[in-house]
Length: 105
Image (cartoon, rainbow, N blue to C red; front, side, top):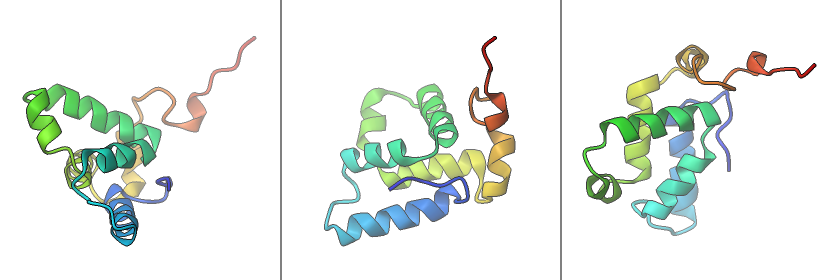
């Protein structure tokens, strides 16, 4: 399961959590949260990782609350719920937009 460029993080998290529920897995497991983060688009994933690294108080607090819901809330706080604005929000991340590709000469 991977987030598409046409989905908001809120919409994708609902779909992801439904799949977790259907599989009978615990949604508050940090390993599920890691899988969720890895399944986000690279630009969204990068913004969340940078934000958590910069504002996280300490590693113990982050590990304790490391859930799909926490990651989703961080993403929504940064990007909002309109995926049409994600390209603008991620414009400064190298490789986030397809037009950033370099050609070698």
